Every structure is written in C-alpha cells, then in structure tokens.
Amino acid sequence: MDEIDTVIKAYQLYQEQTTAQGLEALLSVTRAWRLVKFIDNGMLSMTKCSKCGGHFVTHPHEIAKHYVCGLCNPPARAGKGHAAGSIRMDAARAANATAH
Ligand SMILES: [Zn+2]
Image (cartoon, rainbow, N blue to C red; front, side):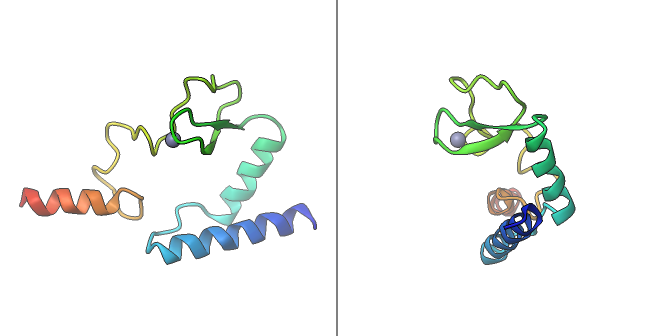
C-alpha cells in the first residue's frame, strides 16, 4: 500500500472516531500528512506515556521514563476558553453550567 493510501485510511479512521464521539475533527488531512513527514524525517517521534502506557507524538529524545501525556496531565488552561471540539468539552460545559 502506498504511503498516501495509508495516511488517507488512517485519516478516515480518525474521522470515524471523532464523529462517533461527537467531536470536531481538529486535524486536517493536510496536517496529518505533514505530521507523517515530520515523523519520517525525525523532527517528531513517538514516546510512551509513563502513566497510561499510550504512545504519543512528541519531540524526539523526550525522556520516556518521565514523559506524561496531555490526557494524564492536561495543561493548566485545558478546557478553558475555546473548548469546543476538544476532548475536555464535556467537562468544560459542566463547569460552565455550575458556574451560572
Ligand atoms: Zn498518559
């Protein structure tokens, strides 16, 4: 299978998953292709999260022993501001609902 076919099939899976979860697809197919190219030429790599064991796209040479992914340790501002389409959307909505 050609690399572009692989990217397109993977992107279709991504779209199916985001649709099934009712989330907005934040990654365009152009961006997905560029990500693959960045991985290919070593500008990005995959690192295993030390908490959940999932593999995540990171800068190369991330210290795997101490790496914690954004799902296990969300950034301080995650869920605030433009939460629409993000995984934390429901949490943000719940927080807003209780605040008003
Ligand atoms: Zn994790």
